[in-house]
Length: 224
Image 1 (tube, rainbow, N blue to C red):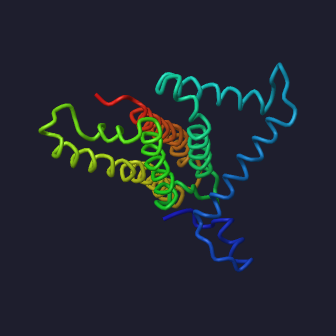
Image 2 (cartoon, one colour):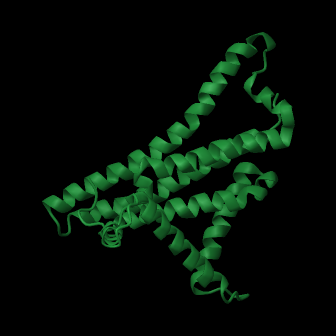
Image 3 (cartoon, one colour):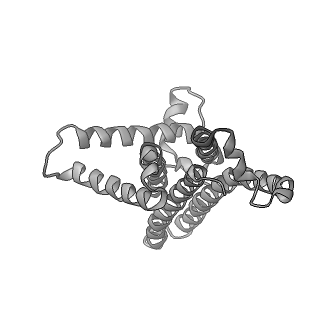
């Protein structure tokens, strides 16, 4: 169950374009972020105001979180982490607009994000440590290494699965609950659910972004 009327779905049908709703709404989120970035950087001032002030506050908060979680080495991955955070947050928040569907309520979008984190984690690990990165999967006791290796591989494969399903479950579940309340009592009663939706949007963004930072930070560490 999603919004009974999806504006972009209607628009693509009128234009005879066969795309999934998650694709068109992903493009919408991208357009929103590009527009906001352009507005914030069009006339940068020493004393920020308006959109520049908002974006500086958001990016400064992300930079502080990244520094606390990943340390100095994590600064190099700020563009990736900030992109995850902003994309997921805006995707989650547009769910509160009637006629709009969050791309994160589709498992395909979330799987793409989670697999990006998975690939980046191990690419960073091999880039930093070379073949020695495999020590991360061996454990501290040599004779237990074959068993620990299998357990570690299963654990790492489970990471993108958990990232995907956690975000999908929360956003899809919120969509269903919100539509049920709107169908039963269209006025006023859904407002508390929409307010809770704002909280869910921020929490899920924080969780996904924090886990992405933790996974990459783990790949940067020296194996012991």
